[in-house]
Image: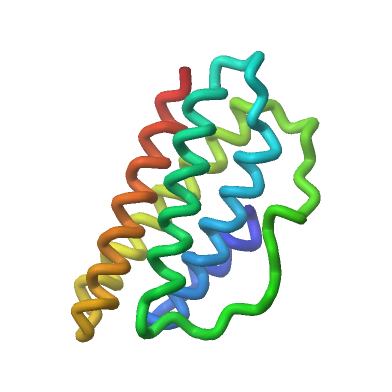
Length: 137
């Protein structure tokens, strides 16, 4: 998630933000999925956050200005499962907050209504993830 966060921080312009957002949602989804443990108090929050991450990723994927995406599947990424779920929740919360801000800013700058809608929808997903990950159990 650190690489996705840095790429998102440096992205400027609609297409780069959309590409970075797609990567960030994918990285969050991989981290969340690797920590979906029914024995923790974060299980329900992680399940709901994973659904929002998938929805956000799909929203930006269909934006007209979305640059071509490689075949990288973040769900195959190795995620260090030794990281406590609470730490994963903090990382996801921080990344989703940045993601929402970037997408909201991009929505305001988009000239194509479909791009604006995609950014708005994805920003709402990021806001939902932020609340779930921040509040925890």
